[in-house]
Image (cartoon, rainbow, N blue to C red; front, side, top):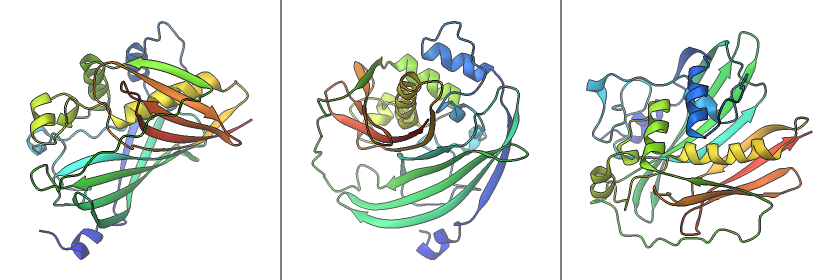
Amino acid sequence: MKSSSDIKSWIGKSIQNEDYISDFPIRAMASVFDYDGEDIGEVPYGWHWLYFLNLPLQKNLGPDGHEKRIGFMPPIDLPIRMYAGGEINYFKPLLIGEKLKKTSSIISIENKKGSTGNLTFLKIKHEITNKKEVLINEIQNLVYREDRKSQKAKSTINIKAPNNFHYEKSWRTSPEMLFRYSALTHNTHKIHYDFPYAKDVEGYPQIVVHGPLMATFLLDLIKNIITNKQKLIKFTFKLKSPVFVGGTIFAQAIKTKNGLDLWIKDQNGYQSLTAEAEIID
């Protein structure tokens, strides 16, 4: 087992990756969202996750489908990795035809004890830039936990989604939708497509809707709400509880002084991913 000081030595490590912003991922994602024939000249909010993909060799995949903890990712011993949320700051749009650079840096690693056992929180900063300036600055929060057999039992308290909202858009999730999003983002985590693994190893009742996909549902709602003169400058989100495939879920939002409070309501009426959006005129 790696000591805490060994793990902390990964703080400050960074990698860089370049990518050409082609139109194919946009057209492919548009088909997942049932956009037919729309002319998209810039990358919509949240669709930057279709670029700068990590492409590990097949032999380097671990038992959960993720790349083994080699290279950039710290060798955290806890076996289960979950996407916990993050923050995206938008400065300039990503334009089709640009060649851009992404720099990823590990900014913090924290070990904690939770109600179910040991946890490690990993925070990574991503910057997407052109030759002159930063276009997107993102903080990604990951949490690592013990496996199902090692975890202490925890009673889950689900929170009902608010009854009051100003805006809403519904989405019907399906295995096909999750497959297509996994393919577009090169996400090989088995909880999104391998039901026996999701159930028997990570303890879920069904395959799990991607956290970034749910964040993208909310960002898509924001795109439909704001006017051409308005701009989203900051989007902060947190995954409160997983959402499982099947049935209709809802992206909902309410106006605030600085923008919007948003959330996903799952097929059982519970609040899952929550978010805040800062919007300027």
